[in-house]
Every structure is written in C-alpha cells, then in structure tokens.
Image (cartoon, rainbow, N blue to C red; front, side, top):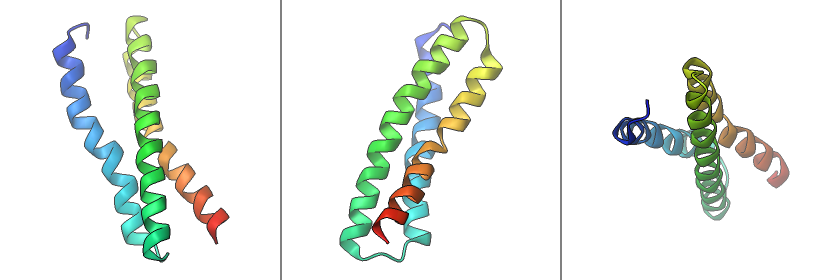
Length: 94
C-alpha cells in the first residue's frame, strides 16, 4: 500500500461516492426552496471535501502502522459525516 498509484486508484473510486451520495440525498429527500437547496448542497460538498481529506490522512497513517482493516473502516465511517451535517443544517433551517 506504499505505492502512490494504489492511493490514486482508491481516491478515484472513493471520491465520487463521497461527494455524490450527500448531493443525491439532498435531491431526493429535500423539500426546501431552490436557494436553500443550493446552500445545503454547497455546504455538503465542502463538508465532503474536508471529511475526505481527514479520512485519507487518517487512513494513510493507519496503513503505515499496518492497520489496513481499521483504515478501511475509517474511510467508510467518514462517508457518513456529510450526512450528519446535512441533517443538523436542515433542522436549523426549518
């Protein structure tokens, strides 16, 4: 897992899921006005970007300590962080 090409492949497959799932959730479940929905989507994308950077930083550190399974769990759990913010922001707006 020390090869940079492996990490690039992981990021290429992880990033679309990490960014598209919260946006898709907002489109399907959202009943807000257009301006509020755009604001929620923008904040979800920013949250997804920050959580992805933190998740990969943590995963790289864990892989260096030979904790590959824990690194994969961390990547999966960090996919939920944008949803937590979406739900919290929707409660504040309503």
